[in-house]
Image 1: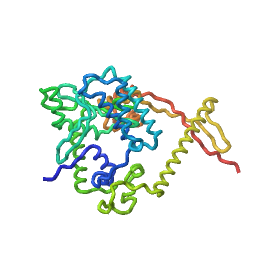
Image 2: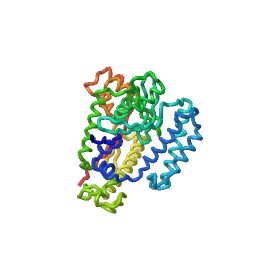
Image 3: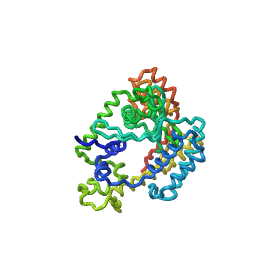
Image 4: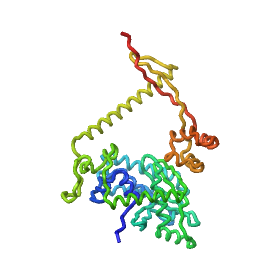
Length: 398
């Protein structure tokens, strides 16, 4: 009998990003370099586990949580965390403490003990050893549980694959079923009642209902296809500007070296240093320079707009260019969570994988959306006037 494939959501994500990267990491077992955002996320997850430890009857005070965070943070150096400098590490440290102080201020009076925290599940299913770590589970009663996943990045993004994976694991895991039955022995079947992402930097929670079985089935077929591709040794690289620019394996990748990496001929598991200069690096530098110039241009545009508005000028002339103010109407979402909940109730969430100002505005002009549903959406947006600067070169007289 073939051995089960060790699999997880993160492994699936890496394979989807680039099969060749997956091969370097999980076939050749070459470690990635430390990433500061992983270190920061790990520290914040550790302190949330400390706060909500179900084995403790009393919740820790803010001072105790901050002390735990300090101890955890100081176990590694800034290099081990992946920060570029001590100064950058101190910024991360200060942000972690700020988050904790804000979290306690908002949530301390409503602390409740969860069913479990940082639960590791290894589920044998369909030829996979599916490894998952669930940040927090709350029991809702009647065999239903809420899964909460902490996010520490810059933004909260709706990631259906991760939610679907959690649901598949929770509803099939004997370990989680045993946890629920220890609390409620009458339970025969465990079901997901709610899934949510909690964005710690902004103290924002995004809630989602249990996904329909049809969606889970379709998702799972995709998971099994990826597993089959891994077993078949399909690791063709899928290069792209963003993923290649930040990839630790660039100096080993056949896209850049022109030849396949051989673990047999390599005497070290250490990653080689990046080349001093190559066309990709030059391109990256030019992109960064362009970004800096655009930021300067945007700042100058805002200064011109402000000056023209103060003087009630609709248009104004330089020696070579004419500037004119144009007003465009846009919308702002008053509450992202309410928008997501409404779109889910109206059956429109599938149309906008990530609800944004642009995608919601598109729904308001979509002929397939009823007038009644549009009216409900309009109640959750506000129209704003945006002034834009148009610049036109003046024709020079001969």
